[in-house]
Amino acid sequence: MTLEFHDGGFEAELDNKSPDAFRTISEVADDLDIPQHVLRFWETRFSQIKPLKRGGGRRYYRPDDVALLKGIRRLLYGEGYTIKGLQRILKEQGPRYVQAIGRGGEIAGGGAAAPAPVVAPAPFVPARAEPAAGPQPMQPHQPAAMEPGFAAKALLSSLPRAAQPLVGADDLAFLKATLSELVECRRLLHGALAAASAGEEG
Image (cartoon, rainbow, N blue to C red):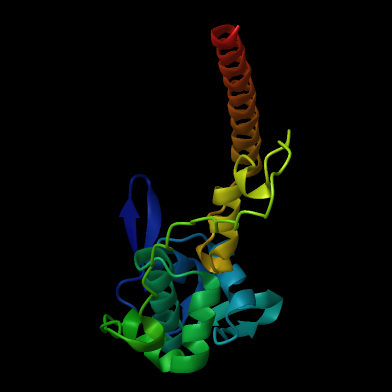
């Protein structure tokens, strides 16, 4: 390591380090352009990350550790994998596979490393009930299949958990308020139609 004078102070030039040299957490964080706390968090989620720890809890990353971290970063940030998906890749393909990706290797076109394609579910079509024998009295309340939002709820519940959209509390409150307004609009329209229909008959 050499020291150079930049902008009124000395700065360590780390590029002169041997490729086989161990790296500190700050060097790795700078190299990967991610905060140090993210590296520490990844250690809790990916048991394959095992830097050497010295006095005071200092972490020293071997070249294979750095390659693994680069692969993890590429898969999480570049390819859009989730932590759970990446854990599955590490379990099924092994850390060498992710290290190879970190060294610039190709991501497999199939198998566990390829993200699952997103398939749009078939539209929800409520089943039609067979007419009952004999006259039926008019029901003031609609069947459950016609409840507001029934089709959307059924569609969302039919999706696999991983494909269901994540809705924050603010979004959920907004959607509920919008649904309430739509239900009230529907009630007003039904009332207006009933009044118009009664006016035509009378």
